[in-house]
Length: 317
Ligand SMILES: [Zn+2]
Image (cartoon, rainbow, N blue to C red; front, side, top):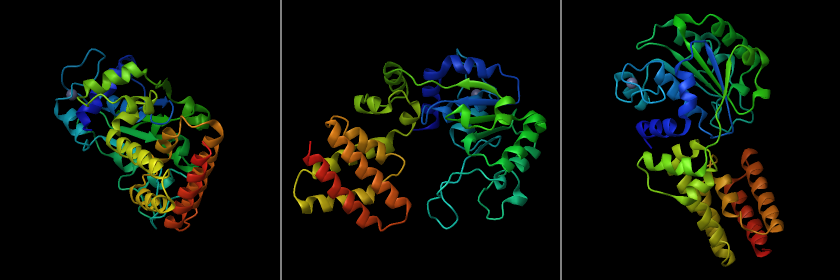
């Protein structure tokens, strides 16, 4: 899905919220809401609002056609920096704990060169358009040193920069950040609003996708990956109804297409109609698979064990 369709989705789903953010004149916003509800999309729309030079939409949303809006849609806006916890370490293995370290804020402290752009250095430079915007995607993962360094910048932002802190749960964000930010919550949308937004963005109607999304606009933005995970989960589950050899082949196919971001949820969605005891067994098998993958166990063996355990669970249904 392109930046332009994302923009249409965000405006359709969060118009009234954008009305507030467009008029915001403070230094820091704290956007809270469930995972994938669309907080990043809203934050990018806010960055667009504060840099747009075109004619605004009905909610004061950005025009979508001016040089700033086009740069943002292309994912190459010079004034927008998204800071996120590192999902992988330099060795390429999955990180056991998510953290935004001080190295994300100060280049001199980024010994492992984990971050390409650092907040402090980014804010030293004047905005190319109107306002530099730093989006901290996962404010609950800020380490204490990183949070303290950021607070100084939030209090006196160089060149009037704007901070947007995103978090799932307000209670997990450091109180010093919460107290310096204007709080807004990003609420899940209704199924009808999601269907409407999907149509607005030019995507075909997809009832399963809307049901799976359960109000989370961020799911629609990752449309292709979600659809792929849903069909692979359905194929995998169906293959387990056959013989043992088919189950092992299905395990291999699942391992190849595995997307840790979407597959676990897509599998659970596929089992939603199973009787409770069978679903509980299936969930246990999936938890064991995820734990094995995180512990760097042999992936092919882990997927085979998962397929056999799940086959067993489905046999109980
Ligand atoms: Zn614009």
